[in-house]
Image 1 (cartoon, rainbow over the protein chains, first blue to last red):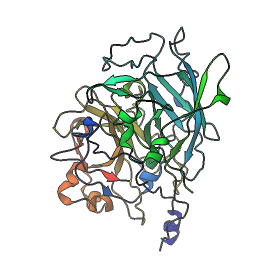
Image 2: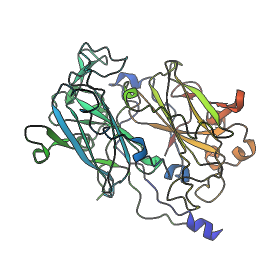
Image 3: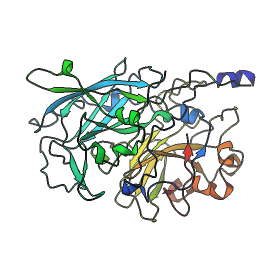
Image 4: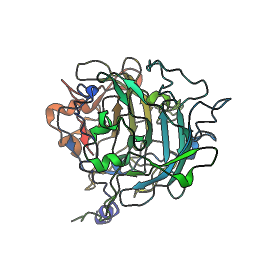
Length: 240
Length: 185
């Protein structure tokens, strides 16, 4: 039994405080009927939570990382490179992990039946990207700058331009869906989703930085955005 | 000095552009002997179905092990264990799977067969997580340490009930009467 217990000494991924937005954020109206009212029940992390799907190369196609080359012609809009590293909070890179993105087109319109924003669809833009980080946690997408768009949360509500990101890490505890924003967006002060993250330093973590060194002359601008997932506690718990 | 983590943001109403996969609901290949569906509906606090919800499941194989390098009992290569289902216009989701085996609790005790679940939707700024247990595993459920930590009158929200063709049914209620138990994982 002692041997079995020792072999079950596993990492823990402590829940961060004051990073993620409160589920009850009244400024974002859709949260009102879509947040639990009962308190969350704390459970220890067992193997079910410490493991997680390791989805990699088998799920992506050759052009999935390049949203400008998925149709017969190129999409309208400002061509951009979005790149960075996926890390754990302790600083360790996360290699071989699937990243999925989706976004609006240059005019702020999503290719989705539910988007009725009166801005045209682009026949040459789907807005879907996938890639897998390399052995050092690096990723890179080529896409176009998404537009801002209006939504019905409050009168004259506009979402700042953003790209949706979905990440798995290596543990169920690390699953993250978030949005990447662009620096200096004048809509930041008015957006209840961006501001649902209460800590200004944590909000900054969602904003990419312009990177002149990675721009490609006569071709594309570039933005750098690192993504930090929950990391393991480096000190194993005492089994006694 | 730990890095500040990237905050969660809502999956929003348009994730169907990118997240659904044609094989998303297939935790196991569709010709797997004994495979069955777990199905249900996602409801909001007004009791209305949530059409823009995404349900993801993760589980052990029938021997209780994972295709993951940290499993100290050895890795089960090739068992995907992951399901992803976007709700339809009526809020209905489903994954096709097999019953997982027992996974040890932190002290080595056996847990009852279960799936861990992530639920996301427009209006949820962060994912919420829950578990799915099987109502026909009465003996195992009775000694499960996680179920024991849930108030007795709410445990039923975690139990998938057997239904036709060997499948199971469990609804996810984000808020209101019969609210699903969500865990701080």
